[in-house]
Length: 279
Image (cartoon, rainbow, N blue to C red; front, side):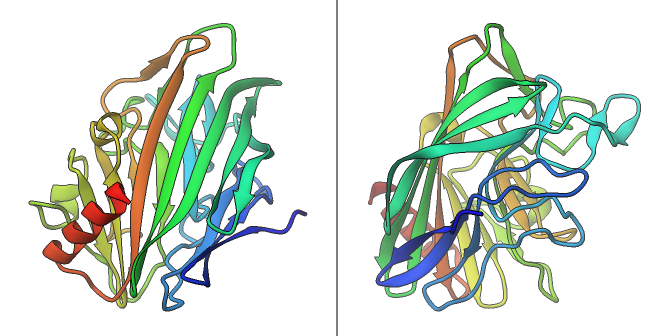
C-alpha cells in the first residue's frame, strides 16, 4: 500500500490523497481525497459511511461509462431499479507527473471489461485564501482511450428522476443535524439541487464548503445536492441525456471548493469563491 500524498496549506496538512483501492462487494476502486480538513483541523470528508459504503471522500466517480459502474453500489437499470450487477470498473493510478506539498498532477486509467476505456489527467492544488479558509482546486480531463464512441450516463438518464450524479463528488461527514444548503440566489436542498449556478454552499456545525464551477463548461453542469438523506455535493456530467465522447475526444471539468472554518453567510461565501477562482 502506497503512503498517501499529503497536501499542505499555510504550513498545515489539509488533505490526503489515497491510492489504496476500495475493497469489498459493490465497490468501484479509485484514488480519492480523505481526510480533507479545514485550517482549524475540522474533517470535512467521509469515507465508507454506513449509509453509502461506496462513498469515498472527494474525487471523481461516474455510475455509468458505456454500461460500466465507476461509482460503486448498485446500478440503476431502467424498468428494474437499483440492481446488483457485476459491472464495476477500476480507476488505476498510473503515476504522478508532478507532486509536492501544494498539489499534484496524476495520470489514471479507467479500466473495465478487460480494457482501458478512459485515460484521465487529474490536477489537484491546495490554495490559501485567508486565515480561516483555503481552496481545493480539482480539474480532470477524461479522454476516450477506446476505438469507439463512449457515453456517460447517470441514474437520471437511465430512468430515475433527480439522480443525475456523476463526475466530481464530495461526501461530507454526517452530523446530528443536516447541513444547510444555499446558492447565490437560492436556499435549501430542493431549490439548489439540479440548478445550474456558479456555486453552491454546504454548511455544517462548524465548517462551510463552497463548490464553484471554474470553467464555462463546468458551470453548465447542474449541481447534485444531498443534505437530508446524507451530506454530499457533486456535478452532473449526464443530467437529462447521456454525454457522448468520440474516440480520442476529451471531456474537461474543474471544480474549486472553498474549505472554511465556521459558518459562512451568502456574502462571505461569494467573496471567497471570487478569490478562490481567480487565485
